[in-house]
Image 1 (cartoon, helix red, strand yellow):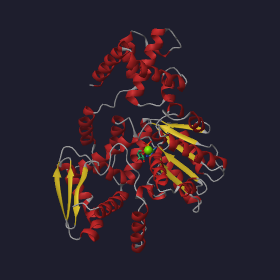
Image 2 (cartoon, protein in one colour; image 1 turned 60 degrees about the vertical axis):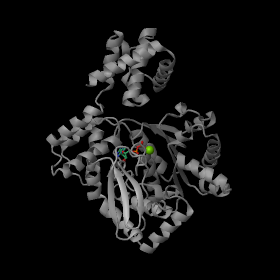
Image 3 (cartoon, helix red, strand yellow; image 1 turned 180 degrees about the horizontal axis):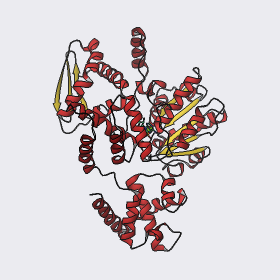
Image 4 (tube, helix red, strand yellow; image 1 turned 90 degrees about the vertical axis):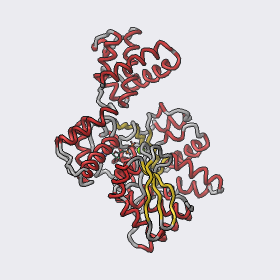
Length: 468
Ligand code: ADP
Ligand code: MG
């Protein structure tokens, strides 16, 4: 049966296999689950035969190679199950993979032992960097220019230009990629630098562990005196965790007083963070707040090209544009789309030619509609409230016009996950704070006012119909 020892070996083998091609691995292993592992036999479950065949052909040889020394000659048995409770990878929030272990086998074994003895691999400082998340692999466009430039400045040796740098924006838009690029860059420029990249979740786990083990001195040494650059990902995770917030607050102050760069990422703007004390919020906003937005078509195409080049997927311009047109919401999905397409094409022995891509995309996008735009939403809202587009975008503050405008902003935010500045621009060049308060207001009204709720339901219905 599953002994903890074999589970560790399994995780180790998974990490090593994943590190070769993280995006593709994570995409596929979101549909795979470990059932049991013992000498001679590994049982896996998966969602369907398609996943099973692809994983067997592309990942199992390597995975089994890593398991061989532990399990000996072993078989892999598959079961197909519609629901997987514990998939190997979670599709929504993918963890950055461990960096590949050093090539020397003794060092590898020692490293593995150390990792087992000390703490889980994902808590080990820089082992959690994804080798592909570098500035060189990051495509810069209008949607992320500021964030990119600010990240580069933070990585530069000449003291922190903006401290802290607060990177924010929707999921899958490159925040983690940028943060880890900073880490890679600092380490390349100054190999002795002590860079700590940690998710707020891992920071919390480590903090609690340190409290329990009475090792707060060590914890503080790691994050304060022993840290030259601190990168904390997904800070929204600290919401409501008062003790961790308190500890983080002191960490933050200590580093900033010492003029050490701090970079924080979040899925929200500082002022929008909920259950976060005001003193932290104001500190987050005290340096530079740079958002990443949904990339425009040209940038999406460039990202696809770069990705295909890296993963050696043949991709024609036609197909790149086709994919970029159909997947608009975020870069993670963009990568998912090309991986799936390449996988399917190679399984069925076809190339990703335009016709094949078109039919596949049509099939997928009939299920998940991502093709609606800000303009579409504005049109639907105008016709619903019998306003002209000019009125909607005007400075008119009459209650009914203002309400329609707020509703339109809210729907854009909900559906398109557009950033607040972007929406501000799309709504007659308004300030992003105006959009933020509009969205918040409609959110509240949707819960308290049945009439507003009815409008929203009706609009949702119309939008879905127009997506058809
Ligand atoms: P976030 O942390 O904002 O949720 P990630 O940084 O994890 O998003 O990005 C999701 C995926 O998209 C990653 O594989 C990342 O490499 C890729 N990605 C995002 N933005 C870009 C970009 N501008 N250029 C290249 N790849 C990108
Ligand atoms: Mg992230």
